[in-house]
Amino acid sequence: MKGALMFLACLAPIACQTQSAKSAPERAFWTWFQSNESRLFDFENDRERIFDEVGAELHKIDRALTFEFGPKQDGRREFVISADGIRSAFPKVESLFAVAPSLPRWRFIKFRPRRAPMDVTYGGVTVEAKFVVVGLEPAGPKANLTIFIPGYSPTAYQTYMPIAFLLLDQALGEYDVETRVGDIAIKPSTEAGQAAYSLEALPKAFDSSFPKNRTTLQ
Image (cartoon, rainbow, N blue to C red; front, side, top):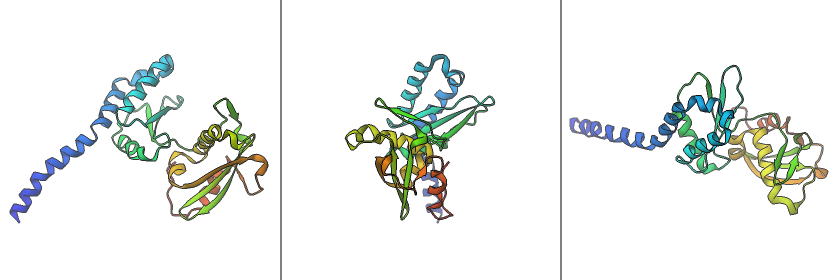
């Protein structure tokens, strides 16, 4: 018994060192963030340079990671850590968020949160959020969605698919889109039925399609 305890005691420092090594890039990012906190808080003064620097630091952790700055509100800003909708990078978002420091002027958020729908422009196409509706079909632990967009044509699928994901990310948040949404189809708005939901109404309908004890990361 004594020998077993000694063996476990020897393993403990090794386990701690391994865990520390795994979180080293994440901790290095926050060290950099704190060293540049004043510049980051007023990023509008040098937007392009700041965005390049933040992106480069995040890519040291994972090339998929990206970010968003929120507006200043009551002397604080939001900083969103995102996997850019890439599921394999979700653990890196979690590990980076887990070691985030507590800073009085910042609120750190993991994954793009739900937001009021906004118009989206991509590939020379602008889609007005207020004209988009979504059909919802429960499919076991997930829900299949059909997003009806004005002007959509199958020949322009490569342009409209990113637009559809951006609109759904706004309505449902990055985490739910990647973990709770099954199939996503795009159709022209002329094919929408009466059961389709506006982007503003979609979150409530989406949440209601799952058991009440499910948790939604907002």
